Image (cartoon, rainbow, N blue to C red; front, side):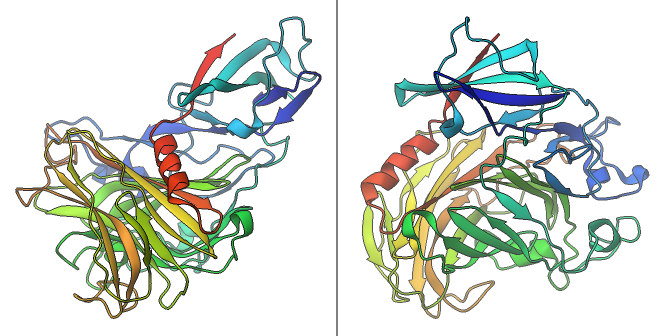
Length: 450
């Protein structure tokens, strides 16, 4: 049986794409292909340590593709509280009166009415009706246009991927794992050159040119070049264990999720791709002693016509020449101000919103921006220029972020970073970027009734 979705237009039913993504608590040892004797335990106990992750589909139905990993399928084949079902608000319809006959080829006893409401505009809402079906599938209604192709240069993931010297053969080596993976939608295109390396971004939304504007996304520990997206991926003299959790392309969204960042070997980064938006969730799990973390998009050197904006800086020319840009700062535990960032031009507009989920009070957060060619101090990774490079740093006033790894202490802190990238038409007004920021921080709500 499959879960399928329908929208009612007031006259007829229309099947819409819905996607079921399975999640389960899995030992990182399984994901890393470790000997079972090396599987981690919760600190000070013999209880196996497990993390909630997306799992590859046990079998593929129409509309889904998935690259094999060592992550096992969900141990519960039924749709349970860990799992997620997604659809697009744009695919919702009207409320169907109780007198409306149910669609054909569904189990009418399983009908669930889902109401999707925008908290910012409560009068705007839509409905989706979910059923079980033995013949229809969630992807049978087609796709909302997201296509993720995971393409590892070395070939088969399980046969060739370097995961670290502690893994079982044939994965017990370390180094870079080059790939040419792509995400394409009607609104944008992305390329990934390694697990943590996003090295191309093109916007086609609303007349965007489709030309590449991104040199790379940087991930880093603040105040040092010793930890970066390159060392996470296996740079010289850095075994830096790493593995993929799952690579899924479905009828509504695609999911790319991976584990390992040097000694933060249980840190998980998950990219979720929608038709005009990318959500990135970084679940930090590591030891103390590091001053802070950051990520920033560095745009392609010598790209002309781009400008940078945020709530306190407007249309700053990106041209490789330093600018006087005021950062936006706040501390965790306090109310965060609007801190959206936008790079825009005839090529398209990229609006980025970041939020922090943590129980650590007093961390310092600040937007960062650099436009200098060559950069000073020199860039840790990529080319020499910081071309409109913008992002956010989170640092500890004590010089050490607390332990966030449950295998290292009985009282780990929680630190989860969220990044939302919206791919928008060229020369987007700052007022629209501010609206997107508000919408990103106030997600659509759903209620379910039989």
